[in-house]
Image 1 (spheres, rainbow, N blue to C red):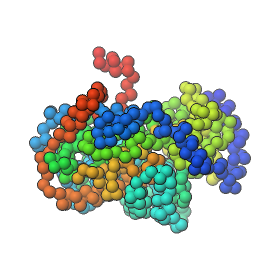
Image 2 (cartoon, protein in one colour):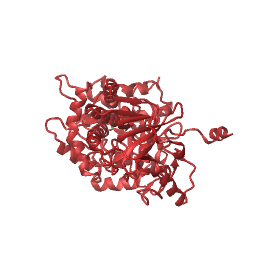
Image 3 (cartoon, rainbow, N blue to C red):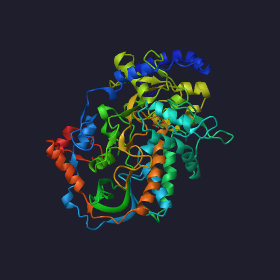
Image 4 (cartoon, rainbow, N blue to C red):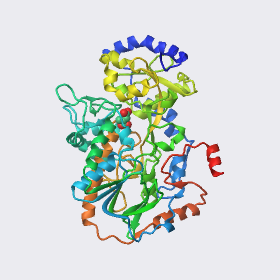
Length: 549
Ligand code: MEZ
């Protein structure tokens, strides 16, 4: 018995018919040819959602005024604050600390740890639970050039090439140079990396890598990273306090234009808290739950771009905020799995992407934006996709090739989480292929920072997916888990230095929020939405209407 319908099982026969010849070729090292540079840019322009003119508009307020952004992002930034500033008293803070870290994923936890080690008192505020983040959702691996025959130099070139030369070079240099140290740091914290029998690291290719440098922990690399970071933070309760279910809603400044804390909102009691801090780190993650262009997402429930909103209102510019990463392989069947990440490691292990005829139509490890463009082309333009019972389009990801190439049991050993996620619906991915389609995976752009994780506001730092510049307009696999740790640590280290030298704080103020609200009025924008939105709103209109009465 299988979770696939009889009609889909019939189509799978075409995949099975072409598999032996494909496995044979793969064993000989023969690949479907990669696209040329010209073809890549042609495919991207024609098929990638970022290049469509519909669904975008120029933002009318703030430091990036005039810049074309996805409608969803523009609407968010053109909304007034959810905070009634007149109802908040900044006179007496509820918490006073050296460092406030907003966000408790990989970047926030890393920043908190290094700041604590230098003696700072740290408050970490998080919207959901400690670790509920895109870090924990990342599956396939973390890059780091720590193997023989590789170096940060090659890693740097790969990142710049993958980003189509739109990356901020100083950030790329910082990330690739720190990478070996980060891998070592994670091991020292107790992370269980995949290793070879002789104890050396098991490393693989990801899309766009010239060397094998993807370090993994099964297909739960992010969860394993988050496990050790969370343990470590929770073991340092003397100087680190974690407030769960308490998202920040606005940054507080002082009268001299420096970051001075934030207002937190308790999701359970609906109370607001004032935090006074010498320095602030924004590490709130990405925007997947905005569902840009209607795409499903791999992101965690709280990924609603809160940090981007708060920093923008405070006057920080955004980089590449019009650029979105669609992961080529999101699940498209069964319906309950739609949007779920199918890690790139599946292709790294040799699984190929096939159309309705069971034929290959692209090199499986193109950079992600190019791979997604190829799949969209096959489904929407050429009409060679597979249509699911609910009318979604997809193509096959031939996971049984993995056992054929590496021996029976490899799928279950290397991809245990994926195996279970499909087995739940009676699909054994070591025997049957998966149906996939691009899914919104990553916010390529975000808050502008320098290589010390500094924003343009003194005392305000930022790290991880909420920032923009390091990956340019396309991120390679495994560089997000790396980015959060490199820039999370750099934010912590530099906040320590800043806090040590910072002059006494001036009077706290939210006047930048009032000014921003006024700018919205003056631009004639009539939006009823408030931001940050904090949680996605999935209630259908008729339910909302009923709630309004
Ligand atoms: O870096 C990522 O996005 C990642 C590790 C995802 C994956 O395909 O597993």
